[in-house]
Length: 400
Ligand code: MG
Image (cartoon, helix red, strand yellow):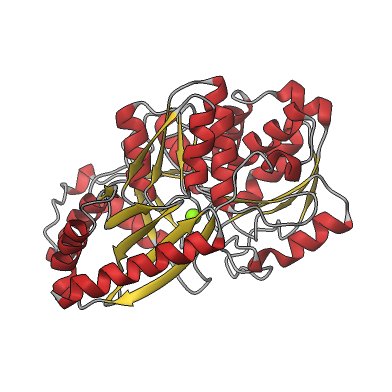
């Protein structure tokens, strides 16, 4: 129904519509970029539960449009002020079936196929009945992996598991990797812009550590800038610096990371939720490219994935929240900044205060009257100390 409505709306505004069928979001974005289309629309709820749905809009560079442009579009929809073309200028539709192939060829040209084919790793792929069913298993097989699939029939009811690739939702994949003594498990969310990795022991790899590992590998080969949101673990900066690169932080939100990579000419970027951006391929989170790069890394090094991860420093994270009335939000954030003036503070998004062995980030929730608090430390004690510092600062800020 939504697909029909989107197509109809586009036609009514004079656009020509190419229907790509079921395709991962990054594959659609790549198609738009490579075929030099005006833009794209994806109907997907991404990682959300099956009863949800949504619409992602992509610009001519294959990037997700910024939040402000989305709001402009929503405003136009609400106002009903559409510019309708004359009847003879209404657009037409056509179907294209080369979306998966174009995307997979693009990825295959950017990874070390020889190293992968030589190692011939056994990978269990779990697309979660989502869009990656039409790409990742075929891509990895083509690159020289032995592939076993799980939940690999596209089904919008998502009968196999919940679409978000969290440790909890990937129980079957973890069991399967262990039972088959596979080298790796790879899972995606519903629209496959994210990838999650299970190591050969069946353990879920934290997104921060995966981000750090891939960032280090990119920077060692192509020295340069890595972009990530302020909420990312310091393990990313540690690894990137050790590899001779540097890190810049953005506000939280994948489209902002993608735009910063584009604008600053960064070599890599991503989020802790498994959304990795490889600008050589696409200025967008890219589950297929992430899968291929993980397999390439594993194959080049000739170690197990769990041993590769040992090079990434471990940090401890504490998430919590403190109540804060919505109308006092801005004042409290400004007060927090001045209360922490004797420390290193990053005000890119909310207020991030650095301390002994860690930091605490305070950001207003988009939906609730709370400040979300992320505290990180090199030890559990330091993480707790940073959490306590954050709470103390908020209480002081609220009291004044
Ligand atoms: Mg997604």
